[in-house]
Length: 379
Image (cartoon, rainbow, N blue to C red; front, side):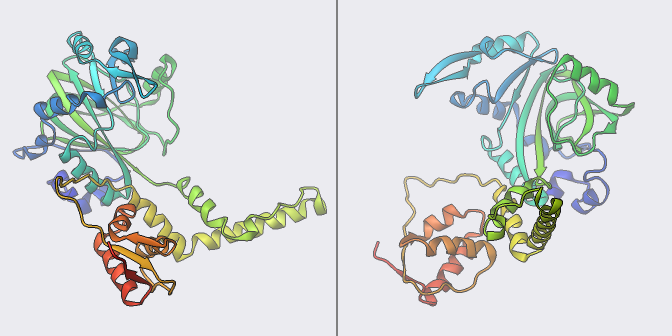
């Protein structure tokens, strides 16, 4: 699944963004296409769960009748490095699954290469933070009641069958999670609206739900397995921290604010108006645009790729004090860091700034060497 076109086939990426993105659900039956189900088979999921030291009460949950099973009932308390850890006990998990509980394995994006590959595709396409959770349910068991998510959702069903109820209502751009209580569960049921669509998900089927869309699901035939990819782009609040960093470079934002009593409040009003304009001007700059673009690029998953027993070579450079040549934003940031070092390695630069193309960094380093800003150092 190298592209979104492959994941959404026969819907094209262009059609998805024109008709569905953020607007309405999209259900894509697998039809005769069964490659999508291969992203997580039962055997692969058992292998993921078999990485026993990964799983704690923080990332593996059991749900029964919409209620979480208490961690101390399926975990062992382990002391590691002086800190207590609630480590999942497989035998106890099996016991609850046999009794009808559902299993939710969170944060699996980097635990199975096919999921990592899809996560990278989604992140690059949506400029978003991507998560991946796996849901294992059994016939007649509903792990969660009606709810909506605080991010877009892309579901790939891989084993068994599950019925999804999609309701008519959509919460407008929710960002703050609602605590799971009996009262909140009633509120979801009362505010979800009429049943809009009922979908039976089978192996290879894909379902897209925009943020805030009310839904619930129930396994309908034996054991069911699906992967949910969460898609969370940056939004307005995300800019505030970036603005803070950029604004603090201007001494006017480090100055004291006048008292609200000065000039009958006119001094404070004038200062606030001036600073508001400064922020507007700052956000309109190419430099701030590039800062946001780099923040988006940092969210792209990058799978680890070790090549032991071979070790990568180390190419050392020494900074001469001469000016570095101009470079594109990402490369420029990397070279700015390099310029502050007495000595650095090309490989360290690539690793530290992995959100920038390695080829671009190498080209930037070559240009800096040609300009005399750096020189090779003995390794």
